[in-house]
Structure formats: structure tokens, C-alpha cells
Length: 362
Picture 1 (cartoon, rainbow, N blue to C red):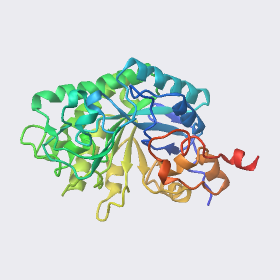
Picture 2: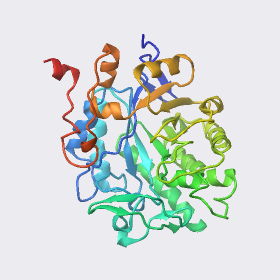
Picture 3: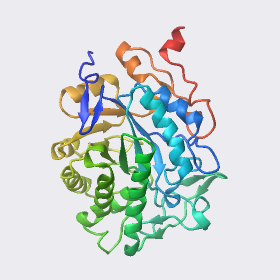
Picture 4: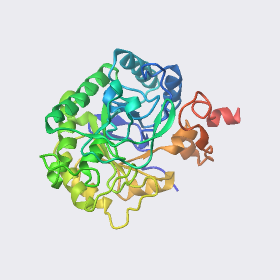
């Protein structure tokens, strides 16, 4: 199949792309310690993948409270800002664009990861199933503390300051992480949000925090350099919602009115069923670029773009094992196999040692 649509240039509002193969955000847990600071190993990793039309960084904690996994990077200290600047400089030197994903995990954390051993925060005091990844290994999730209404401005401020810091670090834009069972998604979906104040109950109330955060971040960056990631049918991290179509149609309409750079939609993740959900309804309600994600191949991405179902497509796992993924797509080359055992933590193995086509043939 010809990949002429996938490899045509496009604009995500103010972010111009040379083609439409995007590197999705991928948590890899390899930041320098102490301080969750990006290091030279991370520079190597991202610069290896600078042939992407756009790189979206791994999820990056907006504050100490936003941390939920050991060894993940932040964007709330001067050292972290400086560390990210070395990455953006390296990526830009190769002619690529890179945006930072802003992350607050909410209840997907543990008191051992929080300042002063405090409980993680959430919309409601409902514990998720599963375990947190701490520096001491995996431990069971705890019942989080429900945020008070008066604390909402502080959550918005954490994202706002992180957006300011991302500008200092030299990024081309930011992506608000409202997907995959983290704090903003926890507010969106009724299974984790049983509040009775202005941030709970109705669809409009549950969408309020995501919209307020996005608006605040857009005021820092300009709306044309801000994307939002959502996972309407996602059940990862104990998420559930009885009316996902109505909820995400409303959210998408409100986000569209902000004239954002793009809407990044996780259409398939972790085996969750999307039966009965219409992603086309989201596509039709969003005036900006629609970025599709979830199990795409080069051919299916080409078809989706050709048929107008997406403007760009992001790839996750294939970019881990294939630093030169766009070139492999162009040549129809075999993809490197992903090593599941080296996804999280560790060093160069399974991170920067996957061979490129050039290395494999030399």
C-alpha cells in the first residue's frame, strides 16, 4: 500500500509536521535519581527517535503530588527543566518537534511516593485495584484522599506552572493528559468520581476540571500549541463510565471551542472494548486535528487518514523497539521485536540499544 497520506506534511494548528507518524507518550521509568531528572540516557533515547513527525514525551509529573511511579520525570524543579532542555535541544538539532505531556496521576500513586508520606489525592475516596510501582517494588494501592472543592485551584495551578516550566525547557507545545485512569480522567468518569459538588454528578460538572486545566494551560502557551489526550472507552486503572458517548461528545465540543492544536484519542488500550462507541462522533465534533492512537499499523494509519477518520496517528510500542520507525514504514521493512522485560526501569538495555535499519545493514 502507498503511504502517501501518512507521509504528507500537515499542521496541528501552530505546530507544523513534516509527516503524520507521531511518537506516542511512553512511560519508561529511567530518570536520574534523586530528583526525577532527565539525563543523558534520555537525550540519547529521544534523539534516536527524532525522525518522528512529532514526539510526545513520556508522561511527566506536574508536581510532587502528581507522581505515581518510581523513576518517572517531573517538570517542577529547576534541575528537571534543565534536564528537559538538553532533550529539546537535541531533538530540535535533528529538525524534529517535541511536546511535553503534563501528568497528575491522582489516586494511581502511593504514600511512599508522596511528600511527607501523605495519601494520594482523587475526586473521591475510592481505591483502585492493583499495585503502585515504588522504589521498593510493587505495593498495593491505598484508598486516596478526596480533594476538597477549595483545593481545585491548586490542581489547576500545578498544571499552569508545569506549562510555564515546559516553555522554559524549550518544548514546541504541551499535551494535557486526561486519559488512562489518571487524575483528570478520574474526574471525568463516574466510576471514580462520586462527588456531590460542582465537580461531580452531571457530565458538565465532571468535565469541569479537565476544561479548566486545559484553558489555563492554553493561556500560557496559546491554544494552538496545546493538545489533550483522552481515552473514552478505557478501563485501565479501574475506570468505568456508563455513558461514555455522551460524556466525551460533550467534552470534545467544549475542547473544540478552545481552538486547540489537536485531540489525541486512545481508541484501543489494554484490551478494553470499544463496541458501541463512535469515535467518528468525536471526530465530527472537534474542529482541530484528530490524532488517533491504539494498535495502528502503517497501512491502517494510511487508510484512516485517507478516509478522513484521522489527521495524524500516534504509535507507542513500535517506537520503543524501532527508533527509525518512519523509515521502516517507508521501506516496508521488518520491525524489531519489543522486549517486554525491559520496558520499565533499568538502563540502556531495551531503551537505546534497539538497532536502526542503518545499523542492521552495516
